[in-house]
Length: 78
Image (cartoon, rainbow, N blue to C red; front, side):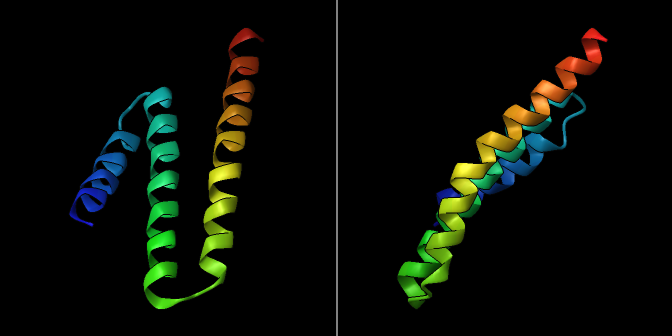
């Protein structure tokens, strides 16, 4: 739990860097850490929908990152 908390704080710190690339890396890592936290909450408190939300975060996080990177690439080439 302590390592997960340190990882989440590190992700927030990475996401607040000035470059767009570091922001994308930070938000992707933060979505993974939030998904792991939700899985832990589901295991501890037996809340069934936390696993569904975590699965959606894991699947949609990279899709959003790729889409955002493609949009940015389109603006830089334009």
